Image (cartoon, rainbow, N blue to C red):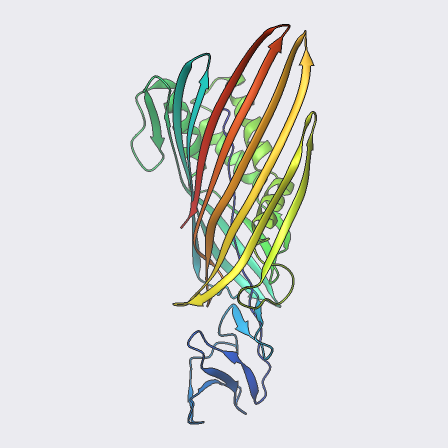
Length: 354
């Protein structure tokens, strides 16, 4: 039952147009957008004639081109609309030690729906609902275990327990308020989710198991955890306007006990095409560390690369597609006196959304 709930979501932003006659930008076809005296958005042809486009509160897209050729990002989520979020993680691992090799693989899927209950004064009230969970694991022996909450209960007892727990979470909801820049204002209803799940499971587990389940749910489903995970996911765009081709980077110094290193991720605003904005992602992570315990010294080195893309819907700002691949190489050496043993391994993790 040592499993974590992953709650991720990505929103990108919208910009409001003032009601006056002026140029407000261009659409993805390069046609000029203006506001006429009635406050309607129109497209200006090259022959200087204009034709109207559908207008909703003068907010046409989440991404608007400015007069300096830069783009502004804001949420443009609509009241009454539901936005899906399907996260899938696949990992393949291999390891060699003492002349022997082994490999394993795993998959995990988490599904959410985000319903916009209200949108007032640049604040969105969202109802987040759990829709589905699935996991699959292939052991070095070749044995495969799996479950899917949208399928029948597994026959394996241990796997069936996981299925039962996650099945109880399906359909549960909590509320969030998020501003148009992606900052979480409040999270409500998580205590009720935990309570509801516990009530559903009270006849399926003994007292000790129920205590473990409560600890798991409380650790995963608390306001600070949800807020942190949500806002970290929203850091796709910097808090400034961007031009096509522009890059921005995030760097971190890693220091976890004896493990030290650096992590850097660079994003590039690649293009706008077919109603979506594409951001490419490239990164590196290099960490190493050493320690000695009970006469045994250990030296570890881990190098990783990150590559992929993020596609964002032009109209809503909602994420259309994410595909990020992380490739790692791990080398660890153990030494006691003159005896030395080296373990080496690789791991490839592919994360996709929608």
